[in-house]
View 1 (tube, rainbow, N blue to C red):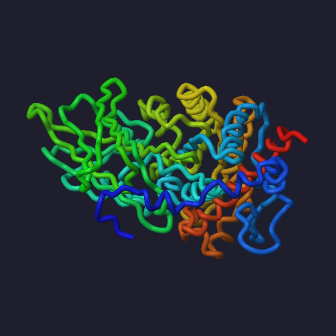
View 2 (view 1 turned 90 degrees about the horizontal axis):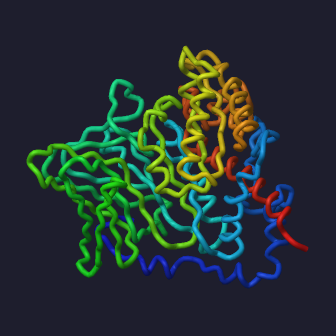
View 3 (view 1 turned 90 degrees about the vertical axis):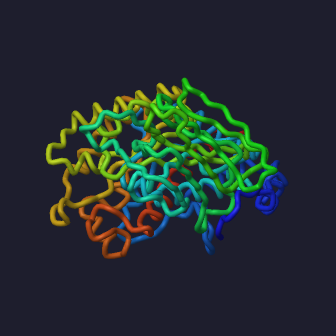
Length: 439
């Protein structure tokens, strides 16, 4: 479907499923949801989204969320999920942060799709995005940034540059007088991604103005510039499915505008899964993002998933103690943004050095995360173990689930990771429901 106009989305909203069927069984809700989320209760036929994907080489015994310390930090996240599942109310924000595994938004997209379709009619929207192609990097397929003007990019992996970065870990800068950006959605995830509010995160020390516009002149747009927060906010009087922005220089003495990211918001109940990844980024690279905490707070995270470590582990000078210290600081920054946020660490995927040598640091990364789970009261999902352990990436490659570099997954491989993680997260939620359900 092509988006040639900036149109309202009332037609799409009417076409969405309603919560009527869910609410019709209100007296049975606690029982039915416990049965639904119990791993051993699976549909005999059909596509059950809670079924653990079956591959002979998977380490399904490891497919659980592990807590070595206090797990009560997840209570708030699960309680918000209760409101969505049982009442169809509220919004829940999940933030997934990592390297190239996350930038491509295939692993995150599968998890997002599963989370957003688990309850009929409860979806929310897309949330945080960055137009990576403006920074001359690969953009996720699911949204299409089309821009004019000359833009250059900066990523947090460039250690010699001290420019300010935020939650995206990347920025795009222009010196042109007038540039534009159009963002539309495409592919099978298109239906339902609408917004009626936008935050454009950008530098505030440059004399540029940001404008939102729409081809439909009847759409009313209000604007607010928040200089302290370093963003320009727009509100629309109806849901839209296409964003159009203009960046205009208003002072000839200033010659630079820097974009840090865009947050697409709406008031619909459901789950936002915000994905932020940078190719090649390690824990130390993410610690270079000076506005990480401030911009993460705009997303109001209920759960933050960290998938950072594959690039640390491929460093010839990998040091487990330094890696652990870096992660402690990242956890501290998340809790500065929201002290109540649940945190999940995912271990490295199995990988090889130069395609020839197994990366033995993967087990060291797992050991670090187990220690962090105990001392920081965070959850841990053992991606390495779930894949099948040391050398399993070769089996994934043979099954067309991993690429020939034996580091990255194919789209099907990332989708499998998303399904496996979703299954583990739902198992943990099922345990919460069984504890809290009353007879």
